[in-house]
Length: 507
Ligand SMILES: CCCCCCCCCCCCCCCCCC(=O)NCCO
Figure 1: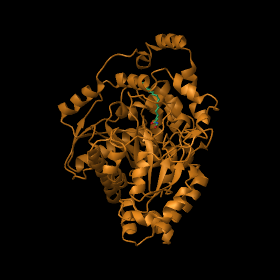
Figure 2 (figure 1 turned 90 degrees about the vertical axis):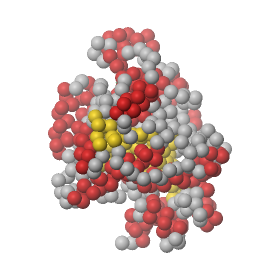
Figure 3 (figure 1 turned 45 degrees about the vertical axis):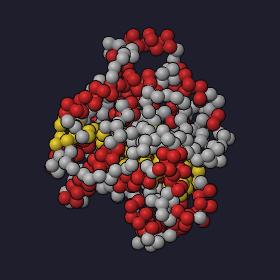
Figure 4 (figure 1 turned 90 degrees about the horizontal axis):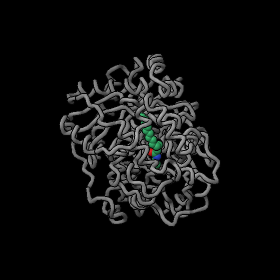
């Protein structure tokens, strides 16, 4: 194995150990990843710029030798502010407005010895889970170039999934760190909003508090996500952003868990492979001695309504305003067409739709989704929940037509629970044959069928959820899932039946 292949094969924990012990130098690690990133970008169009300041940072990195991430090259989604760089969010009017300062997360990571070296792609205006915009174009999926990488942190997921970065940061208001992780076979984590600083994470809306956005790490394995959280959660973060809690990262230990599970949710399209992923992981968890309890998400239709009316309380007016002067990317056409409908026409449509699609037509009602959900967890005495995540990777331009799938991920932004995604399997021929069941389930199911047709071999992931501020527990649960899947793969004879996904094969 060449030195480059060796470096690229190391997990984040192994890499940091080798750097701290001087078995590898920051220079050889940096240039190895830079070369790989350039190669991956040529194929996938996942990057927006190489951060030239990183070459300067590399020269003085020795002063950060005691940092947790000393010498580790790091990738960043473009909406994370970086001093003297634009964060366009794919919108023309944000071009040529360089930031005055780095965002807090980047400042802390630099102190911890990490070297941000590349910025990554996203969908225009960030409120979509595809990955294309008129400035940087479409990002492709590393496992099938005919599919999207997902979004909105799709550039991160594609780059990490193809081996061009060992750790990166995405942002997530509706699934944007988790959905592309699912599409690209990596792990993505949405912490409880507020646990990590959001200061300097640019969004297209300001002041929207109903559905909370948060930055979150993305990497090839769960340990890397945990190491990232450990590096960020420190006194300096609280000093730079006192809105974050003085809550040290607790590595803890893994005990037997009581796990709620469900493999589909009402009125929300779910693909056969997403359902199978949950069922297979449920069986593995039971065999390992955990207790699995059926769980029905409470008031999901109320929540879907709150998501839509919270994230777009003005009916999409601000969203359209921000796009003024920009060409609109094709991934947004379905959404923009809806936001442009006059309010009176929407009301008429809602009236007509009500008997056929009540959830899409109901008026906002008051409800207490957070406390109802917590009460349900307490009644069942749950530690965590296992559930599906949107996937497998879609054909281009279908994400905007399938906003009806967003409750799979956005529910946990609305509730402000923490949630993460772990790849567990690949799409089988049988999953593909089972797509015929989607013909029966209404218009959205038929669109989903078109979106995911031709997906054999693509990654399948599951979602792990925990209560607010239980980020460490969520990560420990994700780690348990990851380890059980790896062990099952070995036991079943190295993927002989095509069921268990070979996590590292793609890298
Ligand atoms: C049964 C019908 C349910 C419809 C629910 C519709 C909710 C629509 C909410 C508006 C669209 C949100 C898309 C979110 C995609 C992910 C975006 C994201 O996380 N971006 C990160 C920004 O930092």
